[in-house]
Length: 472
Ligand code: URP
Ligand code: ZN
Ligand code: ZN
Figure 1 (spheres, helix red, strand yellow):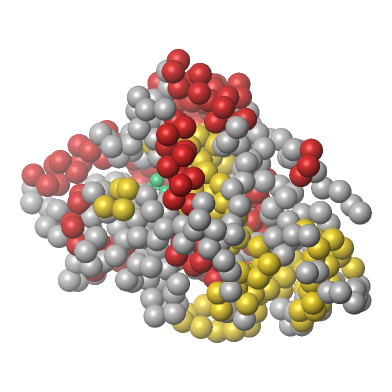
Figure 2 (cartoon, protein in one colour; figure 1 turned 180 degrees about the horizontal axis):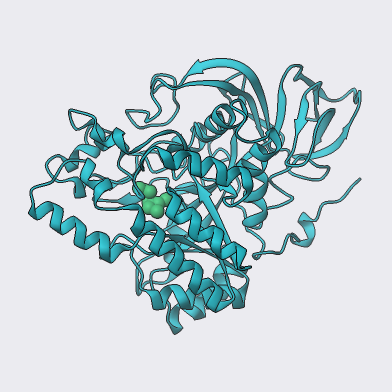
C-alpha cells in the first residue's frame, strides 16, 4: 500500500526542508509539497524530523568470541537497531584459515536469513592471503556482493593477521575494487604487556585498558595507513578511540592517502575510569580498543566535526554481565570483549552531538547514514532521501527527553553501558523499504523481512541495472 509521510522536516546530509514523501513499491516515489493520493495511507510527521534510515557499518551479531557467543543475534540485534533508527547493518563474517570462504559466508547467511527485520550485508574477515584465497575473492565480490575485507592487527593467536597478509589484502582490494578495514592495535605488543600484567598479579578489568595503551593503537593505525599508501589502496579504520589514531589518519589523509576512520558512541561519552567500577562491574566496559582517558572524547568529537573521522559504527558485540562477562573474574583476559550499543548509536550522536552543538544536523545524518552508505557501496539505494531510493525512513522526535536504561532497551544483554544517561530525541517510527518496523515506538516488523544486500565495488556508486534509480 502507498504511504505519504506528511508535514515532517526532511533532513539529508545536504539539506533540511519541510516536504511530504510518497512511498510506493518499497521506494520513495515522490517528494513535494502538499502531496495527496486517494490510495495512500497518510502518516503525520508534524514536529518531527524525517531522516534516512541509519546504516551501521560495524556489528557482530551472534558471533563466537572469547569462549562464548555474542548475546544479540540477528533477531534481537536488528529489532534493537530498528528501535534506535538503524535500517541497515553490515555484520562481520568471520573466516577460518584454510577453509573455503564460502563456508563462512553460508554460515552467516544461515544465521541471518530468517531473523533479520532490516536489510543487512556482510564484511569478510581475511586472516591469510595466499593463492587459494586470491582465487576465491572474485566470487566473494561478484556473487556475494561483499566488497569490504576486514584484517585484525590484534587478538594474537585468535584473529590477528601478519603485515604480509595486510599488505597483500590491500593489493588485492586495489585490484578488485574492495575496501580494507582494520582493527588497528599492535597485537604483539599488547600480548607482551598482558603477559607481564598477569605475571605481576594484575588481573582486574582495568588492566584490559592498561595493557592496550593508545600508543599501540596509534602505531598500528599509522602502519596500516603507510601500507595503504605503499599499495596505493584504500583503508577504513574501525573503532578509532584515541588522539594517537586520529593523528595518524589525519596525516595520511593530508598526504592524499585514501584512508577513512570510524569511531563509536562509547568512545565519545565514556572513559577509562568506567573499567575501575567496583564489584567487577568494570567488566561491562571491556572492549577493544579500550575506553580512553577523558580528553580523547573531545578529540574524537572535533575529528567528526572537521571530517578527519567520517562515520559512527556501533561495534555491537554484546555479552551478559552475568554468565558471560564474569568468565573473566580473576583474569581480565577472559572477559569477552564487546558491548550492547546498536540501539543507542543514533540517539547518542543526536543528543550529545547535534543538541550540544558539536556537529550539525546534516553532519549527523552523514555520519550515521549517508557517508556509511557511500563508503560501503550502498548509496543511493540506502543512506539518503531521494526519489528512487529505498524507503528506509526514521520519523524522529527531537524534543523528547529520556533516560537510557536496560529496562527499556530492546537489546538482549542484561545491562546497558549507557545506563542512566539522559538524552534528548528518539525515533518514533521506522520504516524499512516502506513497511513499518517500529510504529509509535512499538515493534511491528516481521522476522526475516530484512533482505541481504549485495554491495557495489569500492568507489562505484552505480548499482546493478535493475537497482538503478529511475524517476517515474
Ligand atoms: O571489543 C570489541 N570491539 N569486540 C568486538 C570485536 C572487535 O574487535 O571489533
Ligand atoms: Zn575490533
Ligand atoms: Zn568490532
